[in-house]
Amino acid sequence: MEQSQGLAPREETEPLLRLAGITKRFTGVLALDSVDLDVRAGELHVLFGENGAGKSTLINVISGTFPPDGGSFRFGGEHLHGLTPQRARAIGISPVFQEFSLVPSLTVEENLFLGREVSAGGVLKAGEMRRKAKALIDELGFDLDPGARVDDLSRAHQQMAEIAKALLGKVRLLILDEPTASLTERETGRLFELIARLKAQGVGIIYVSHRMREIRALADRVTVLRDGRHIRTLDAASVTDGELVELMTGRRIDVLFPTIRHAPAAVVVDVENLSTADGTVAGVNFYARAGEITGIAGLVGCGKSELVRAIYGLEPIAGGRLRIHGTPYEAPEPRRSLQGGIAYFPANRVTEGLALSRPIRENASLTALDLRRFARFGFLRKRAERRAIGPIMEQLKLRPPNIERAVGNLSGGNRQKVMLGRALTRELTVFLFDEPSVGIDVGAKVEVYEFMKRLVEAGAAVIVVSSELPEVLALSNRLYVMHHGRVAAELAGAEKTEQNVLASFFKEHMTGKAA
Image (tube, rainbow, N blue to C red; front, top):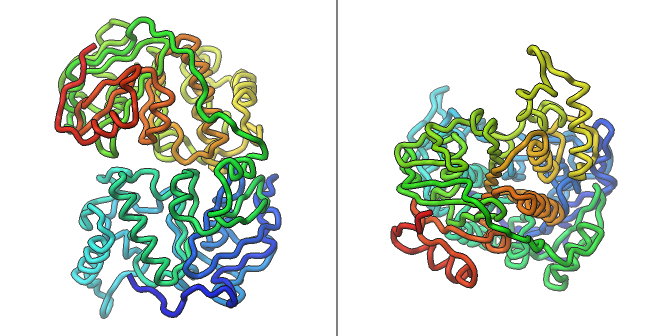
């Protein structure tokens, strides 16, 4: 990594980045309302706020994706106008967005050098690019093959590729948007070590995260945004978690996880010796009952997501048996699963869950278009669709409530609400949640948890896959821990503790309890 020299932070000098009165409007929405922000060289500055607060818009302005409609922008002591993503990278502003910018059909090394290829006489110097890519990945400590195609990588490895891409070349200001959402503990530790090195070299870092532990471990200062406005900038060492959440939401949140009245009833999902075709799930025994939340925990890559995807029909099953409500379910596929009362909410809302260019109304009704009340004789009944989706989005507190707005204009939390709205358009009995709180803020998390509570207390079977240990421990009545594609433990009651889960993460292959 090439780093600029002589950037050690000094209080008396001008900040590396200074924004004053930045305003940004989209059709019908004031996304940023006269926002001020400064970032010093060698500082990690956290942007904190609810989904929709303006964080993503602000970092898009800083990285040249969106031109501001008003305000001033100084970087490295110079006024900037007409910034583009290419110019931003050229002057050392390097973003890592939550939604990846990689080209799926290219390899990791091709993505790293895309737009900045090394050539001589019009001929690409593939060997040199490969050596540089490997050296950078080795320095970062990532388990990543430079020659692998991006569409063959897990989300965690795609995240590593994004970070590597941002650090190829001179970096003066690094922007990290929820960078640890898909990383294991080990990989997160590597990233934190890298951040410390970059700060020591004088690199300024803007860090977007909803994870309090990360803010406590990394932040020098925190700027809170709410409804597109700058609320306060505080020293991280002098503010409490409660104060940050209150500034973020404008209200106190005393209880993050609701008290759920679990009433376990009949077994609804029954998995026996299940294995997937790609080997990520191997001989798993698992069951979920109506009236309770069944949790699945484990490190990234342990097979927990693949298990629920196999149940829904998104991962081919190589062996084992699956029963739904006691009836054998062979060769599952998504359409049949949905018609049979099973809903799946993917971790990656952008690539698998939503059509970003289409309106909220269409996205929320997608799972119910086979029902007669929405479509008849091959024609969509738009009036019925609007009558159904409008109240559902009001119930889920979508902001703003305009159901004709494109989903791509929504924050992460509101996108998740659109996904949840699908569950209310038809009769469902089984709900599969894969990383339900990834990329959403504290306020939106509370609303998602309350949604699950209502489902369970109405008698549904809810399965929650989560890499957030406090989340899956608090929500579940029973908890499976997966390790290398197998069930390492099944925990309930007094055994369902953080210590037991962590111990199970590192056990050798064990077979969980059969249903």
